[in-house]
Length: 272
Image: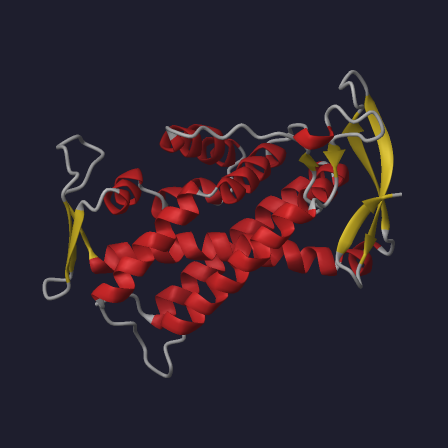
């Protein structure tokens, strides 16, 4: 059998608590970094040679609209396949599992998702805001393990334990190269990319797969939703719409203290 409703909700709550724990840690360490994170601070290469603008921007709309469509898709996927409709469990179905492999692979290859998880992990570790995250085209397994998971572990944050429950590069690669076979009758997924190494697996039960998928889709969905909710409650939480943040100067030689303003009606940050 696939996942039961009670377990699906437990995983959701576990991931939600982990995000709130990490975000609260960032907020505690540096309000500037917290605002930059939920305000989508980005380095814009297109502004690098423009003498009038600093390429260290706040609330770049490009990523905002890309994330918006992803949030809608994930919400529709969850409602379509995991609404449970009065049932206690979601039964095995090869059509849905194929779609889940596609969604799973997209999540763990997404530059937007990995960018945010990297920033969150390093900010929770007390580091400066990274304006331009370098994500490798290849070798994302090492990037996820060494540059994201290990930094959550350093601070004893819950994502250090959650990421291994979600991510396994062999599963992502199996889908990418069509090296898997779904055996619904025997409740397992056979993996043709098994090489015999200690970290690889020959097969995974549909129940274990559904757990990894649930952790992954909740991470992707709740990362966007929780940040969006925190933006909208920002003025009520702090009693102001104006916040001081630190950004590098255009030549990157000094740090500037500047004010950013959040407009709740437009859900938008801008430099004052």
